[in-house]
Length: 169
Image (tube, rainbow, N blue to C red; front, side, top):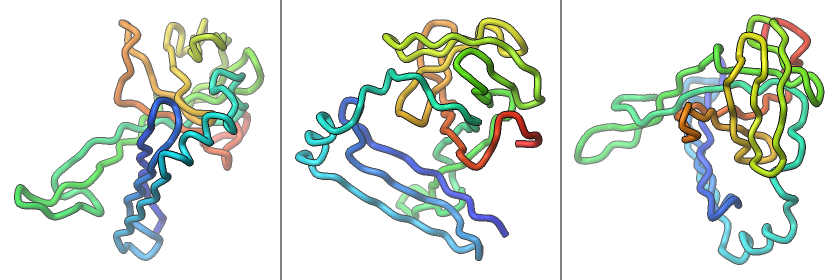
């Protein structure tokens, strides 16, 4: 059995103030963990953390959609039911950054992309993901943008264990 976890971060501005982890461990048991930072730690992070608009690291950004669902693994019982976070993997949204201008999609097709450091937005300029845009929300994570520049439910964290040149992801 594999471990499955969702990490939800609470941000103050662009700095993480709390992290909530919920999921299933390797034995099938529910696991929950909450870590919090004080406002002082968040303020220190303002000085210590570089701007998130720097060039994103190469690697595979494995996208998923998370939603609160009744009866999901690790659900939290309440008076209205047992709600937890359901994770839907989205392979067609995944991308691998090979270098500063080349990406690979889930099926191994390559294309070109550009990264705007001012806005933190990656735009896929050709290939199978042509026109798709992602906004950098952390040094290691993006969120997919819709046609009107709004964030969607798809989050794409960097998976350091995967190589964008080696299939399958």
